[in-house]
Length: 420
Image 1 (cartoon, helix red, strand yellow):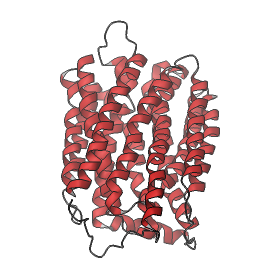
Image 2 (cartoon, rainbow, N blue to C red; image 1 turned 90 degrees about the vertical axis):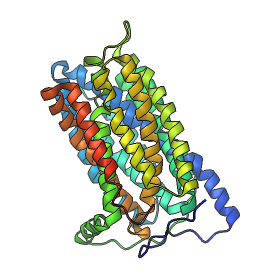
Image 3 (cartoon, one colour; image 1 turned 90 degrees about the horizontal axis):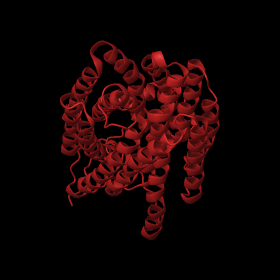
Image 4 (spheres, rainbow, N blue to C red; image 1 turned 135 degrees about the vertical axis):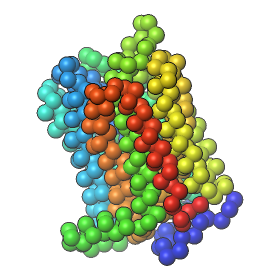
């Protein structure tokens, strides 16, 4: 294995002054909990975002489902964008992660109960905004755990454990959510809320943390200046741009998958769009899981991150063109396999890459929160962009635009200098 990359003029990642045996025991407890906590998070995001929410919007107003769903998703994503870096900053200042993980998970249960009771587009929007806010409190603190507690040489493995949670949570969330369509959507929301609350309790019970010295709160102007300085870091800025474009291309298609299957893809006789989503989910999960594990471990072994991020991003862009050439069930399955492999490898290696370009080790949660704007921000733009593209050039135009955006995301890794 090559030696870890050394970043000139960058603060070293702090590692606790503990015995090797203690570190091994801590990592042994932490690694599986990273998977559990992230799987629960993606059960909520994908089970609701890909199934329950679009069905709920369609039940409220079938004629304008695409425009209404774009509105609900876009407005609520603003809350995700605002709450993620704010929650990261607050957890940095408190010197704790676990209370924020626990509080966010429990509060999400209440927000999901309110969302399940909504019967108008406005109330659905408000409910999903509250869910996004609470989930991003949970996510911001959880995201900071890896740079806080995992040594640099184990970041690839930790990123893989985080990444494993994405396909598992997505597949289980979509499959379980489909069981509650269309008659019992409210119960589906409650179940998802119970899952995220239970995961928060389990994580904070199993993964103990040593309280770090709490930082003194900075004035609001100073906090905004700190966010600006974070994006002022050359390599961090290019990682941010790449993640933003990758997520914009991904969410432009993923958020509308149910409607795509309803209105664009020719399904086998007797197969409903909801059944098709549930069938695709485990295939996507298996491919993503395989690529996540192999990508994370391989990037650790060869000590190279940039080439793998570049290739996986480009492959994701190519996958977007498959449903354009072949808009049928076979084409959708091919697209699912290729995009799953590409996205799994990308998320594992790019997450490891991110931890190596953080501008400030002492403010890891804040900096990761800034990066998570690149995850949440595209969710604001993607619904509006996708609804306009579908209205003007159809679903083929949507896929082509997503492919182009993703390719630009692949190219953005090239200017990064401090990591190979």
